[in-house]
Length: 435
Image 1 (tube, helix red, strand yellow):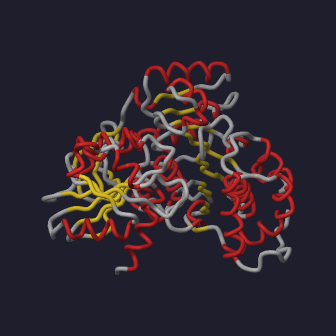
Image 2 (spheres, helix red, strand yellow):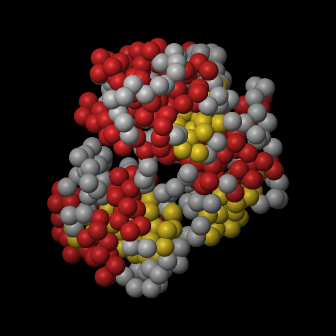
């Protein structure tokens, strides 16, 4: 299908505003609309091989690691992730470069009448856009991250060469169910007949469910935590050194957090399966180089990222309880006298559990919200603190929250901004203006 501008949207700005306007349709958790969109677009998803990744936490990390490894092995590689932090085009990359504004504008113009007829969601159209771009750019492999769940996620229209399921915890309960069992079953829906699968660190309940699904699909499944190949040797504020198996050679991962060793381990097992199935052979030298270029190749940001010093300012996109529970160990990577946390979260998340975890850390917390319709109100977050309110404060936006945090900190202190992609995005827009 040739994407030739039909003229309705004259600029990228107008086209992207139209796309974001589709968010009003909410989440569509089925495959009907994406099937129609892709058929109209000539089924571009059939023109490249793919790796499909689902998980409550860790899927962005594993996706980014695999993307960088494939690029450095000389393969033209697409990466589709969500949401973005500062630029919509972060979601769709080919060999580390953003999708072109012209392609987005032309695609929206070409598909406009079909979009108006089908009434798809923002994510459904974005998924079709990504697949069309990967096809147009003649990518050999595309690393595809699910948006929500797995079984009925728009991305599950693909038949990958390997399926990957990272960590599983309670999240998106309105769509995926309220138990680990139901959520695991939904994410396990990306396992395809006769297609190998890899899973990260999971509960025994999740392992049993995924094993059953894999057996029913005649799919082999590898649980990477049965043999953890990664041993962390040294930690720094911008990442950690580690060894793989019994090899004494050290590798550097440019992101803090011991939990990232789980994601590296899962990615390595995925690469082994690709090689065993006559796919790319990513050697250890290439893998080491791919980690060095991880941020550049995958625009991998926001995972406990140090963006300023004196005081230290860290941005963290953790947006559920499992992510917030990692804060205590992540802070051990940094030297500081006092920490202040700026926190905001979406109203459909378990913010009560997250706030209870923040209470346990005993650092002052400033509640705020990003400029986004699904954001929980600071007053709502503050009300959960009850008698502990002396340690908590609230501000109506990130600018005021940062001003308060700055007044509370000195040169050797630390400010952590966490709780949501949207909060980090708002904060970066404000913070970058200060430079």
